[in-house]
Amino acid sequence: MKINRQSLFAFIISALVLSSCSKKSSNIDPITLEERQNIVLVPTDKLTALDGNTGMVKWEMPFLGEVSAGTAGKLYLNQTAYGRIGMYSDTVVLYNNPSKAKNLISVEPSTGKVIQQVYNQLKPGFYLGCCHELQINQLIGVDNGTAFMALMFRGPFSNGWPTTQRFAIYATDLTTGSVKWATDIATSEIPAFDNV
Amino acid sequence: MMRLTDNKIYIGGTKFSYILDAETGRKIQSYPIGELVNPIDGTFYAMNNEKILAVDSKSGSVKWELQKTNPGAYTYPVVANGSCFFGTSGGKLFAYDAETGKKKWERQFGEYNQGGFHQLATENGMLFASYMNGKMLAIDQSTGNTQWESQMYNPDDISPWNFEVKGNFIYAWAINKVVALDKQTGLKKWEKTMNSLFTRKPRVFDDTQLDL
Image (tube, rainbow over all chains, first blue to last red; front, side, top):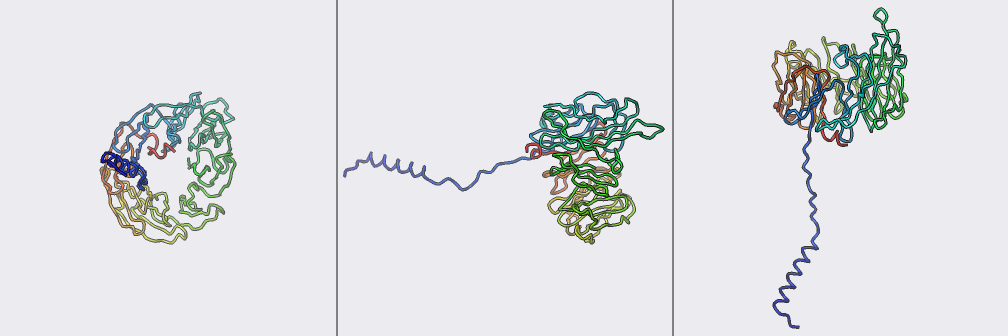
């Protein structure tokens, strides 16, 4: 068989191309470079988000209340919807004059943009419309689209002592804003505002 | 004290504690002991005015208890690698066997008038401790030896320094100041003074928490 030089050259090139195509893929897995982004949320008379690496301010928003981590890229903020009447302890502030403000706020963590607002404040059930009631609706945590809160209520006061009290834990569906369940805690065992 | 974890809600009053099912709100268990909100391997570690307690989470029985004999305040106990740690406002730090309550080691840090320990946290064999005079310490859990210490702020300024360990950082705060330290070395990475006082405890999140 007679093979000319041009055919031989074409054959060698084809063989090299086929050889390279049939090579097994590399066993080295690609490395994903991961940079953890911490955000430090500082509640003063407003809420300030600091970049955890640099301390620089990422965003600020007017806010007074509690902060909880969330899922699906959200922060959950439990904004006080009551007029503030004073500090109860280092961690709890007391409020009165309930309003209809939507207190539970979902926030985009990198920008502070408000995504959703839900009214999430269970009423004591025996609100008497008098003065001197103490009530907080404290955020325990948020999981799987449900906010878990604690209602603590004392009032009205007579000679400095509360005449009624209630301590209840309740769960709110964040999609619908409806209360999924509410469980009363025996205040003879754990009084409202006890060790919160 | 209230805590949501593992689809349960823990409520720790002063004298009683409850566990609720987060799905239904049904009461799963109650204990005639306060402050039981953080079970570790089937045991609650709690503290009241008189004692530090280890309580079996199933039976509610006390496994061991220690009388608080040192004067002044105690830090809340933390547990890691089989040891229960707590510190005192007098600057003493203790390690006890978490299962038996037997003392492993005890160390004195600093002078009595420096405010003593305020908070402890554990991670990867290390015990991190904040001191009221603005000092942060990294301590070997097994020996009590200091790995590094960092003076975060003016040592004459006695304040309740709380902190959180997150990623490569320790974030500490008091009154209106936030300080970030390198977790490995204790070197200060940044500090910030806010214009007004904290109304609540600062919180730290990372993107793994936020994008589950």
